[in-house]
Image 1 (cartoon, rainbow, N blue to C red):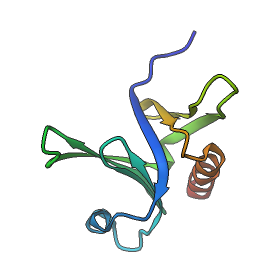
Image 2: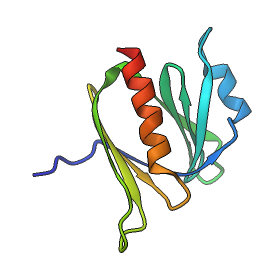
Image 3: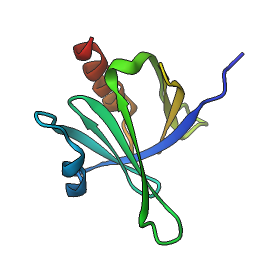
Image 4: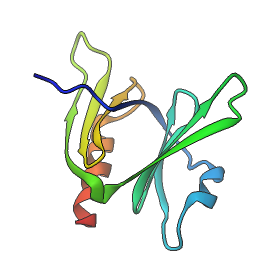
Length: 123
């Protein structure tokens, strides 16, 4: 039986690091990679995953999720099959279950290796 995901994000293609992420970073924290989401971006840093979610009609209201790598207990990755165009990564965290869907332009193996690097070097 599959537990329902607490949060679901959809990542699209890899993009340059958005400059407006810099004020969110701590001293010594660096942005490593960024991916486009439906309305904003997800950024992997040396310490956490930051997902920005623009909301409302104008997109001026922004909700920011910050997931420290140290809170990730386990993850799985699934590549797209012949009849399925989307890949996905699932994260089991202290905060709950997070499902990350990947559009055709996102490389599931790149994300899998980013998560492995982040989680395994933080423990």
